[in-house]
Length: 215
Length: 115
Image (cartoon, rainbow over all chains, first blue to last red; front, side, top):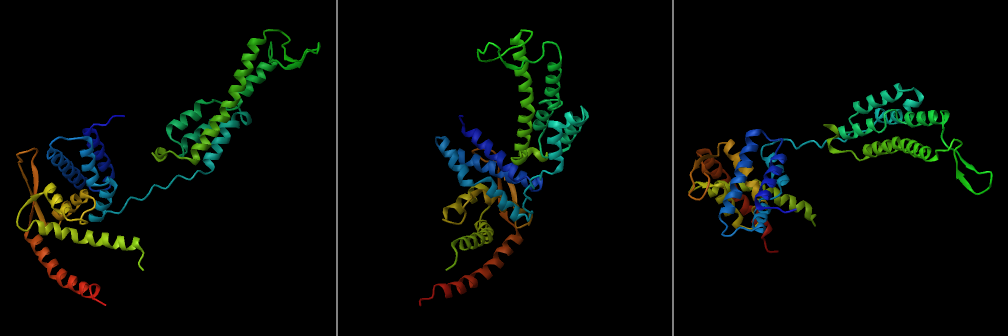
């Protein structure tokens, strides 16, 4: 990533603005403007500006967080309360369980409740919620249902059987067409695994919460 | 022996507390703009660790009416905000000086005493 001096300055000022967020607006503007002016003066005083020069100027000004801390003290603004990490509770646990097996216990309805709980919870951000919803609708009920129907329907799922000739264990299908059935089996197993992966992912996100979770 | 962390914090507080009077003192004779003030302060070692912290201070002094500002055109770039002492700024500086001198002497009297 290449950085030009202008970009460095821009990033610094933006950072400063963010850090000064809890100061009254006019004061924040004044400080940011003055510091921008300071940088411009310092740069103008250079004969031949290099990136190192600009970095030195910014370093001389100090860390935006430090300036902000000083400013809060000067203006007697209370320091920001660190955002309390959201504590996952029964909503999250119930959501995970219902997303996984809700559809099995209570066809369709159980899973829908899981989705509602997922979206009500503050522990996940929108991306997590979308992932939780689309992988997989119905949770385990979908692949289990497919397996069930495939097993009971025509050309059902193939059971690996020991061939009578004793030539070893091969999966054979009574009706032939083993390749399509294999495909179906793989798809069903994949479909069976995805809800577990999703649940594991969501559980992981509970422990490593994204900062945007409270948004 | 005092923990160095505690000592550092005390020195930082002392610096912070006296910095505004140094700024006021720099403005006694002349009005100056921010960059100029920072430069003068930075010339003295140890007075300012982060130059940027001067600007919240200047803003505060202005709100408290100890300094006032005027924008002036600059020959080398955008206009500059010049800071000037007000009457109450001058009075605050005088009051500080009246306290600081004896205070410094008293502390010196003890800490510099040859034992």
